[in-house]
Length: 347
Image 1 (tube, rainbow, N blue to C red):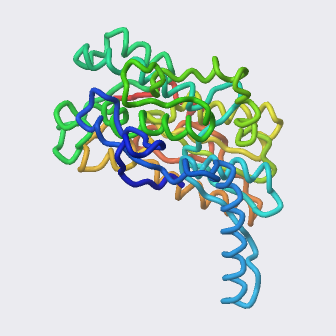
Image 2 (image 1 turned 30 degrees about the horizontal axis):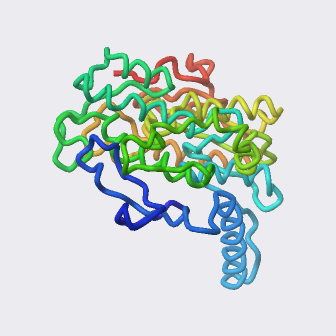
């Protein structure tokens, strides 16, 4: 959904800086195809429906019969698509699995509120020597982000924080800045993104969605992609508490709240993975963030639970926090597991 190529900032009006200016990679710029004329987030919904059409035709042609069941599974932006289509086009699908989907709401939360706060405080955090006691660190945590942690030990392969091995730095230099730029261009195309002139005051860190929402009529644009929780097919959602791109308090938990408010809780299960992160590989040897937990095994289990739910009528376990080293259990109440993990980080 978000494919790109590297480009020259001065020659490309749609260029997005990869990392904050203070980073070693702050001079690298990217061009995302999603920002090209005629593209939009709503196109993702349409393309997914078209891909479903093609898949159904291919199955029919190969097996000489139509598929009996059709499921959706998506990660991150893909999870957002799953949520939206189970509400918007439920007759096309039998159920879905949403792995760390993006939450969009016209009045917030959404990533164009979260990310600029982190970016505005990033320089101060760097200046403090990445001190967790600094006002900048406190501001980032107050914005919903989980605590920063260190790789053990830092590895040369972790090129976005090779010396200190900071999880925040890894995300700031690899995701926070460029993601903000891409989505500002998609949602608020009148915002004059300027990442070359530090005095322009229209960089990604300067973006204020709530201040621009009414005067620039952003609510209708975000409303076209919002996830209000009004799902009409079974859906299982998973997200890690240490998600440092999409803070769980403003994404997974916000979506769960929306589902409950919409009266659709009976069609939804919500599983939090203690210490899970948005990027699985950061737990692996390349990056050595050993405090993190992998989400993929739980996603595989959740998909099987979805199949049992739809095809055998077996209700999946209630929503729960999956502890470190644990698994989804059939009776979370008996295991004293709350729906939401008590802390974002368990050492």
